Image (cartoon, rainbow, N blue to C red; front, side, top):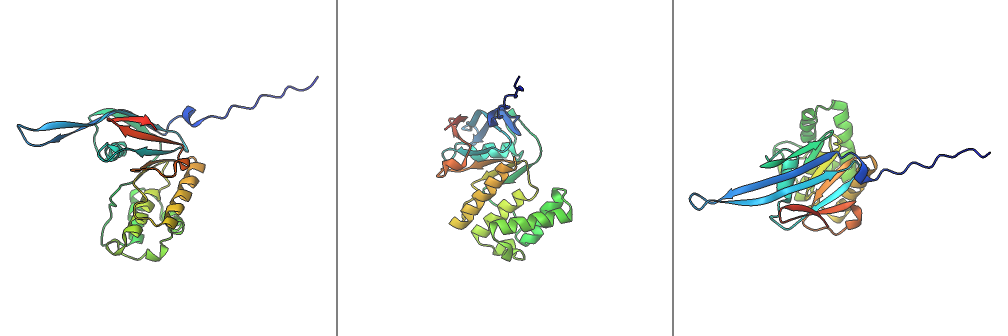
Length: 227
């Protein structure tokens, strides 16, 4: 009698995995004008969005559709009028406009953020070296932020979000100002994070390399819909 061979286990799809980020029913309105002509502009109307481990998701939409508003709510920088956000692990956030200290060098930024993340000095230095090498701006390590070009400032902005190796990396127009070589290096980094089981959410006005994403979500009429 031949031995029984167990059937191979079914591969867990991204959709079946426990999400590392889960947003449900997110609503946000802004008040415009002055009394008595003041009015409320509803931007988000019950957005649902989740990310699975190792998933790369693109978030697209027209200007003013609420993409950046949603991102700020997800990272806790903005309060939602309604809805819930839950996540596991750490979040890394790369805002569209870099938040840096003009008089600090790139090295000093990494040291400061490393302490804020609770990293050991050795872990911070090791991560910093890897980021410099991956994005190719080590020669600016001792340069002050106010003396960096727009492209190098974008690299620093991204590097600070990557520093603590977050489980969820959230990027708002991260490659604005990148040259083509840096753009390719950026996608190499994203691919490495996917392989390591890290999730990435990328806001973009338009998507040219759709094959690099696991899926693309569009903000339309205040809702998140598959594209």
